Picture 1: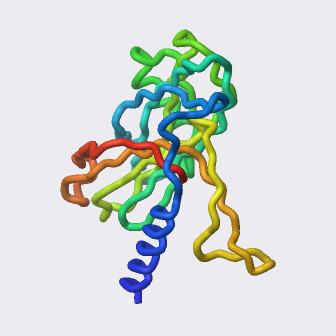
Picture 2 (picture 1 turned 180 degrees about the vertical axis):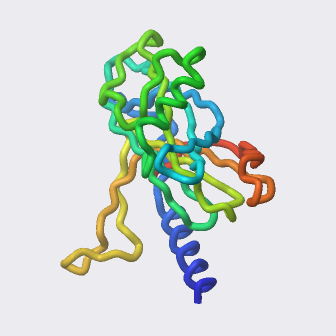
Length: 210
């Protein structure tokens, strides 16, 4: 039953992704997308005073530069998705002390790094206003062999499609609002029992509507 359900979910999600529109190749006069740089995900182990075991966290540092001709609004969202059907929102069960430890680790290269949860909702124009942001997730399923990171809020491009399954109270297809989203894909190697030694292999990036 579990195998059938997993297969059903996978097929449903696959069909949903196929139905989604692709981002525009050339944006209109009112469209914008910020320039994005990123460092590959890293892990950090932390043990807190009231807990017996250390906890593992994964994080990614992104650098956003607004090269448009205007200041832009920034309302980001980030999720980690595994090939075992686990979806984890950024910041879930992550205390401020985790960000502080990461900030200390990278303060030489990123002296003004900001937390994803507390970053301001505006990106000003120019390279002098580049934002360096750390995005943090708790550890994920040890059986996962592939993980994807989805980061939205980097563009104002949106789309609306009809949900292939869910209906509203009138029996009509429910509308789904999509945003242009950066997808980063990684393969995860190594024995799950030795997660500290796990190696991520970058498989590529692309823009999707999600």
